[in-house]
Image (cartoon, rainbow, N blue to C red; front, top):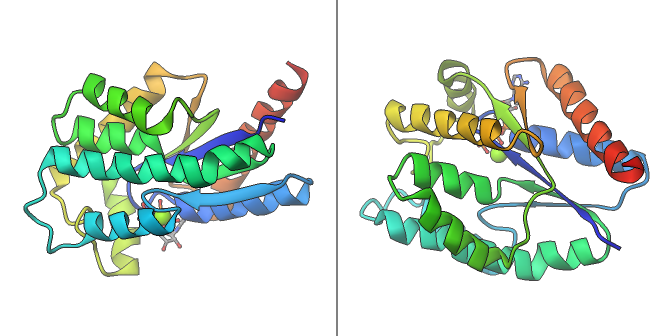
Length: 211
Ligand SMILES: Nc1ncnc2c1ncn2[C@@H]1O[C@H](COP(=O)(O)OP(=O)(O)OP(=O)(O)O)[C@@H](O)[C@H]1O
Ligand SMILES: [Mg+2]
């Protein structure tokens, strides 16, 4: 049995967490065994690393330190959670995964994609998403949503140029891997976005089952 790894990616506030939960319900309703997880985190050790990454007190964190912390959390996440679930034949939904590191640390922190891809391959042992939903929307709209939620963390307080660079990085990713990375406009209602996500996932599962 080989499971499926579906990841949700995109800028802060795009609706990843909301849509992941709705997709999990949908897939369970059609009989799939679904495991929901997130990055950074997903394990007890990963959550401790997440605390370090998001703490506004860690302002002096070097770009390479940040990248390695994300990779360390991912190595644990894959070993402890994702790989075993895939081996059991489950559908794994991850709220962010490797693409976030490549985009945030690559596009916005000036580390090379090649370096990041190499440490990522080491961290994951080659486990990669089968399908990635990219929730994309403009900074004004997404910022408004997050403002409504309150309490910006260290990453969310970065400058506008950083957010623009992140958004651009995600778009380049979708252009580079159109088979895997499927952009969805995040600006619709929750139900509209969900319908688009379900359509993409159903199409993917159909192709995977029937070729
Ligand atoms: N389609 C939508 N229309 C309006 N508001 C939405 C929509 N989807 C999500 N929201 C709201 O916008 C906020 C951000 O959504 P959510 O937390 O799902 O995004 P996220 O991509 O997981 O964000 P983060 O990157 O910060 O984790 C939440 O308050 C959520 O209720
Ligand atoms: Mg979220």
